[in-house]
Image 1 (cartoon, rainbow, N blue to C red):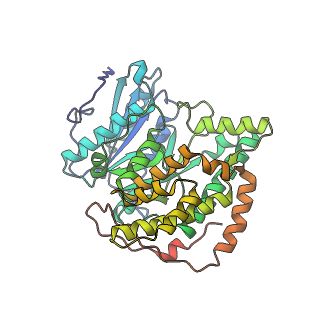
Image 2 (image 1 turned 60 degrees about the horizontal axis):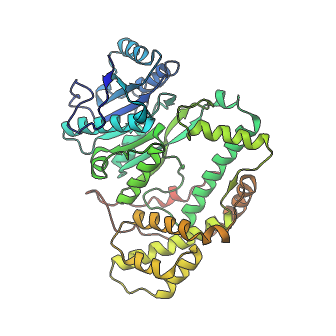
Image 3 (image 1 turned 180 degrees about the vertical axis):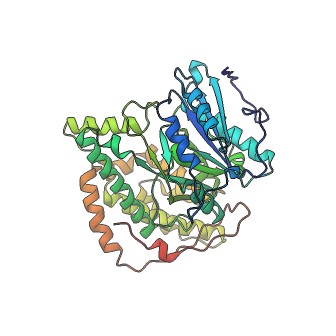
Length: 423
């Protein structure tokens, strides 16, 4: 029988009655609503996980919790039947009925991730990993191993690369598929531009740009520290990513962690991936381009951010600042110089500073006047040309900001990997 949902589930309450195995290192959570068609494919991918040498990962190292919420189909029954056919998979299937005002994926994902955190803390594993995926997605065989490898290397949270299902993608309106592919290219090129101008020493290129619920991992310790998944109506994964950055933790966009997700147009989330695909198709039908930030604006923003990173480090080391450098950054970003001067000296993490700068740019609205957007196709072409020139420039070594380290030693930057390009 489905559980009756309580508006406030306390951390001490249990969603799963069975205790976790003492050997459990990761808890995978899967919110599922009317996914009877896809749930078995999702679970099949989780059964076949292997280590880097291709050997099966011991089933006792991770567990899976499926939360069938507000279902009107056989999602829970099919998940349980799958578990019966694969008894070596540590699988828990829970049914729950949310009231209408709480019937959204963010609520289900929060209940699951809170439960995963509780179970890992029961084992005394603050370094245990809470891993989220979606019922309409299926992970690569090395998904779990890739996540564990990144955490072992020092990451506090890991985003997996999301790839649209090729078969379903081929059924899209032609302009929707073309725009999707261009968007992927643009995001990769922008990630390289960022690495060449203002690299993150703990998230070097090559890397991807995804940090969404279909593949999002976080240590239990960090999850508890930041207060868990934000309880928001939509984009709960983006809200969690922002909370991770605000904390000063290390986030890795790993190419070794990959998930294929559905390219269907009838998604469960109002502003999710399917809505984006529908928007791409609509633009094509209207012969309208998708607009993105201009390449010049992106480069100026990144160069200003790189200078601001240096200024913040100088403040943390109690070195005097030259006010003209702060004013120059403020002018570049279209924000108040006096406001930025105050912010540089405010005790806060780098992530908090960047979030406040972004909000300030939006409130002052000068940036949008200075830099109107350009079409996606033009941006991709311009980025390719600009990057071909920047790759010839000797790279400047960037030191990590002083801040959150979660008790770990800082990992050295892999310069060779950071300078590798995805063409």
